[in-house]
Image 1 (spheres, rainbow, N blue to C red):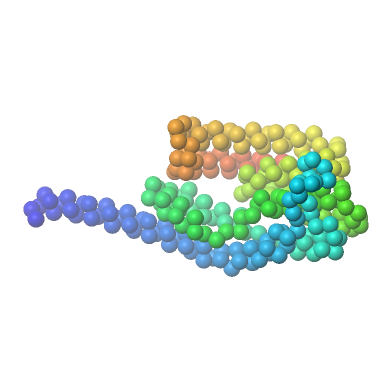
Image 2 (tube, rainbow, N blue to C red):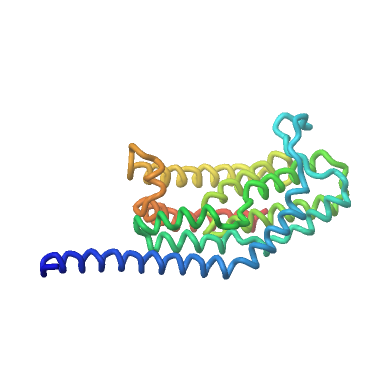
Length: 259
């Protein structure tokens, strides 16, 4: 091997080796977060199976047109589900560490690794089911002959969940928390005098969400997936989400203090 070819080989080997080292470092960091959260996610999933999944059903014959989610009617069972749903056991905020990691160590190679690892990851992100649980509680207070004490516990659990979603790390789910507050006004579980403030807060939050969405889509007009799943997309998303989320969080907290 002459000197020229030897130098080319050395440079190529160094580049490949450095790249492999970078990937290995990212994978190691990802797996460490996964290990740290493993026991918490197990506890969270057990709670979900026991207290959330079994608490409601989706009916084809609802009480009213929009009320397709029906909470367990039996008051004793309902109380078990309400009291058993411990929001302190949720891991959704802590699971954001995976996305913080990729945003801080983003590269084309790390994105590929991240996508593969995340597909296999065991999560406790059941936001949709939690949302239905709370929505079912709103309908139940209207339709079931529950005691006032049970109604108050149900209302308190919904507001506790909304408070949890007001966390600045919960940008998208803040919109759904505001939707629940609007529904509570509609069903007489929050004084109607707060209705307009809640509505306007939702409108502003939705406008911020659309601004983020449009900014990311502008990154790649021809390929929406690559726009969202790219380093530039992650960077732009976090750049806008952090201040927007903080603003919406404060607005929700102000409302909760009033009601």
